[in-house]
Amino acid sequence: MSHKPRFLIAAHPTRGVDVGAQAAIWDHIREARREGLAVLLISADLDELIGLSDTLRVIYDGRLVADADPATITPEQLGTAMTGAASGHLEQEETPETSADASQSPESPEDEAR
Image 1 (cartoon, rainbow, N blue to C red):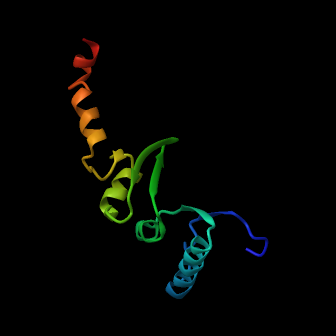
Image 2 (cartoon, rainbow, N blue to C red):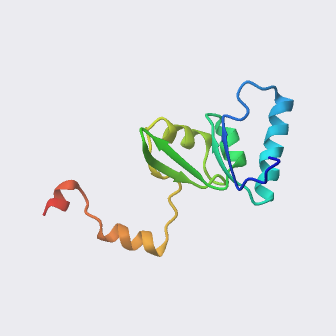
């Protein structure tokens, strides 16, 4: 990172390395974030994703299928989204906006057609 980049794409940064090297790579990514570098982390390591991310977005089959807060998501929930078995907001926090939206949404596809 000698040229002062603004963006880092880290694709599977610790795949195949030993635990010591993994910790060093994670430290470098955290330091880059502290210095203001934007980081796109692509990984199949759920703990890595949760531990290094400010926010999580899951793309499955070419579509954005989920977003989550790494402070509240479990590895099981994240893994489920990554396999396509779950989608949407993985933490269901009730806010005034979501309450209003829910009250105006149809109960079923048949209700929507009416």
